[in-house]
Structures are given as structure tokens and as C-alpha cells.
Image (cartoon, helix red, strand yellow):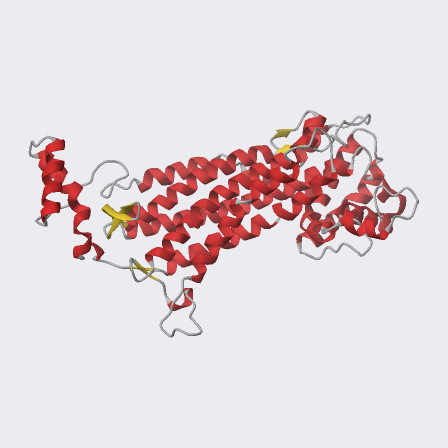
Amino acid sequence: MKLWDKGFKEDERIDEFTVGNDRVLDLQLAQYDIMGTIAHITMLESVGLLPKEDLDILLPELKALYAEAEAGRFVIEDGIEDVHSQVELMLTRKLGDVGKKVHTGRSRNDQVLVDLKLFARARIEKTVRKVESLFHTLQEASEKYKNVLIPGYTHLQVAMPSSFGLWFGAYAESLIDDLSMMKAAWEVVNQNPLGSAAGYGSSAPLNRTMTTELLGFDDLDYNSVYAQMTRGKMERAVAFAYSSIAETVGRLAMDGCMFSSQNFGFIHLPDALTTGSSIMPHKKNPDVFELVRAHCNKIQGVPGSIRYICGNLPSGYFRDMQILKEVFFPIFKEMDDCLDIVEYAVKGMEVMDNMMDDPKYKLAFSVEEVNHLVEEGVPFRDAYRQVADSIRQGTFEYHGTLNHTHEGSLGNLCNDRIAAKMERVLAGFGFGSVSAAVEALVR
């Protein structure tokens, strides 16, 4: 069954090629397609395009289908082109001609658009919650180990004293900026394209504001042509936000690989977080972090893939956009899995103490000695030269204590302010109002 069926028999090879992976991928859209249909027919009844008695028949059936899809029991049958066709087929089988009325005033184009936005909106919320959880885990570790020193590096050369408090806290604060980018993507996603039909509106007297409110969208994609132009643009905006999170998590994974190696030895990974070698009995490999790093690099490539698929298309709909699902859908689970396993690893890792007592890190305190001389009245450039000379002559010693007090330094991590910043970003998403609208619609 195809929504565009005109009564002729299509070429099976063409059918197989054009449908592609949609039957599998569209299963992820099933509950959102049903949700959009519920909102659409509710609106149709309000404007006189669907009799009240038909709405009363359709709504219970659609809500039952929604529950099936939500539970993962929705199936797209062989020979059915996509999720939209399957939903309409099931309604028609059960309700007869009433089921054929749900497509009034719609095109498959705006169905796909609204399904994708509802899907992305739900997955964004899930990911944001996982980012929030990792953030709190990192902040807890930052506070717990704030007095445990490690060397800081520039150019992978020992530079200045750092701490596990700074290290864990840095990745926590990085996630806030990632969620700021996600908030921008959320604003692109949370606009309603339903009613734009094939991209040029409809002569039916649709009430697009009503479906916007029913579906919990913040606003409309008003211009019907532009609503279709958001295909690809929306996916790319979301993918950019996910690539930002992936950059942070992948970089943390790289540090995990490096810091757990024997040459650094700053952290110890328990056996459960490592794998062995088939030939070297001593090996404990940080495969978890290595795989996270690879997954995150892969996610960072998705915005480019999306651009290559649809970056040079003119206005209007083109079948090229169907391929977007194949690169767009996987990023959600892939990123969520990485967030889960990295949080698990952070909770399981053991931090090594007294690393800075090793003589090889003694020169990390050279800046501290320069600052000590400056406090005694020596001009900075002269103090720098004195310390440099002592290093060159092999006589450098530092016996002082670290006294970093400015915001964001070793002695003043400002984790409470960072937490407040995260709360401000999270509050901007408005998940509660979306959830309330969805529950009112489908229950």
C-alpha cells in the first residue's frame, strides 16, 4: 500500500530502491506519526472537515495504536511503504471508510516533517537528562578530589600544577556550553510544520495554531515553503548540538586513555572497565574509552554528511531527503550509550594521590616561584629570568605552598556557580510544558 497509489503496478526493483530502509527506520517514528494524526484530526473536526462522530470513532483507535507503538509492538508489514501508510491501513481495516479521512489537508511531506520534529524533540530531552546526570557526577568528583594535585600540560609538556578538581570540573562546565547549543537546536525543532502540506499550504481551512498547541510546540514554521526547507536544516542543527557533546565526551575519553597509561598513571581503571590481550598477560586496555572516542568522532562527522546530502538543493521537496534518516537516527542512541558508559567509568575510576611528589614534576612549580619573587618586589621579567637560570643550572627548588584564590583556580573551583549556570540552561528547554501537552493529547 502506498498513499500515492494511482492504480498501476509499480516496478518491484524501483519500489525496493526507493523505499530503501524506511520500513525499518520508520518504526522509530510510529508513535509520533500517530500523535500528529491525533492532533490533525482533532483540528479537522473543529473546522468542520471531519464529523464529530467520526472523530469519536477514530480517537480511541489511534490512542490504542499509540500505546502499541510506545510499547514497541508496532509493525510495518511487508509491502507497506512507510509508517504513514501503515497507520492509515490499520485504521481503514478496523473502521472502514472513516480511516480514509485522516489524510485530509495533509501531505506525506508535512507528516514526515512533524514526525521527525516530534521524534527529535523526545530524543533531545532524553539526551539532555543524561548530560545532566553526567554533569552532576563530574561535579561530585571535582569536589571530592579538589585537593588532589596532578600536573597540567601544554603541548603535552609539563606546565603548571593542576588538580583532579579542575580536571573533572572542566568537563562538567564544558557540558553546559554543549547544552546551550542543544537549546538552540531545540528551538529549531520545537516549531510546528504541520499544515504546510506538500510545501505550498492547502485550500482546506486548517487551524495550524490549534495543532501547534495540541502538540506542545512553541511556535509555527509559518511559511509553507520554508516549512519544507527545514528538512535537512533541522537535522543538521540537531547533529551540530550532538557533535558538540561528542567533542566534550570524546576528549574526556582521550584523557582517560592517556591518564590511565603507565607513563602517566594518574587514574586506575578497575578490571571490569578494561580488556586484556590474547598474547600479553599483563595488558589492561582502556577499550571503553577508546570506543567512546571513536563513536564520538563518528558523531562529529554527521553534520557534514547531512550537508553533503542536501546542501545544494533548491526550495521544495526532493527524495534526496529520505537518506537523511540513515545518518540522523543513529546519533541519538550512539550518544546516549556513550554518556551512560562514561558516567559509569567516571564513577568506577580510582584517582591516584601524591602524583606531584614525583621529582619529574618539580618544574611544574616554576611559575609559582616566579610569582613568589614578584610578591617580594622583583619585577616579573627579572623574576622569570632568575627562575629560568636556576632551572638551566639544575638548582631550582620550590618549597612554597599553592595559594590560588581567583575564580576557577585550584583553590576556588566555583562549582556552585557552575551548577547554577547549568540550572539556568536546563530551565530554558521547557520540557514540562511539552510533556503536559503530549499527555493530554494521547491519553
